Each structure stands twice: as C-alpha cells, then as structure tokens.
Length: 140
Image (cartoon, rainbow, N blue to C red):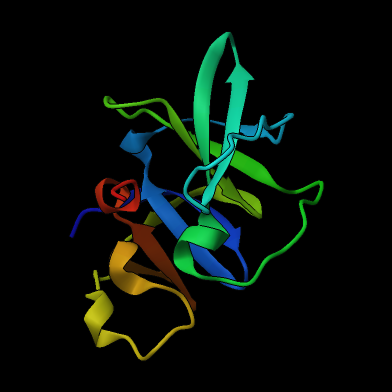
C-alpha cells in the first residue's frame, strides 16, 4: 500500500489531518476581523499576503469545547477553488506519511466530536489521524 501524506494538526486531544494536496500554507493567527450575523463556526476574515480568507474554527465545527488561542494556534489555509478559506486549529504538527490501513469512521467507537466531517482514519504508530473531508466541512 502506498503512503498517504497528510498535514496533521491538533485540535483538542485529537490529531486531525488534511490531504497535503489540499493545503496551501499554515500561518500564525493574525488579527481576525469579525463578521456579524454569520454561522457560529466562522470566526471571521483575515488578510494574508493581500488576499482575504474566511476562517472556520474547527473546534466549533466539530462540536468540541471552546479553548482560548495560544502561541501554538495556527490557521491552515486550504487551496480551495470555490473560496479562499482557512481552518483555525490548536497546533500544526507535521506532514505525516501514514502507511497504515485506512479505517472507516463508522468502525471507530464513539468520539466526542461530530464524525460527519471525517472521511477516514489513518494510523501512524499508536496515533489515529482523523482525516477531514474538506468538501463536507464547508457545506452549511
């Protein structure tokens, strides 16, 4: 089986990942401009490299508990063809080559986050990496 490369990041106690081909870059959290009357999981807008990105809070989207921003907090900018978007995460970890078997999310015992946005799970050593389905993540 060929290796799966994902950009891995931590949110709450979980390691999530996005296929490396869908990630443009990762930045420290700059000033986020709030938008009134918007979906709860959208934090607002940032201006990065003279481009405006809509920022989604992954904790809120997955139904995880609130946490304050820290020095480790990052925004993962996706190379979406529809709209420039980014995900607010607790900590960007690494690029991981997970050569373990893919596991369907339905085969995993209950976790305390919304599983509908997970496409599958990769295993790297003892860690499960919950790979996000970015197409579903941004459908409201």
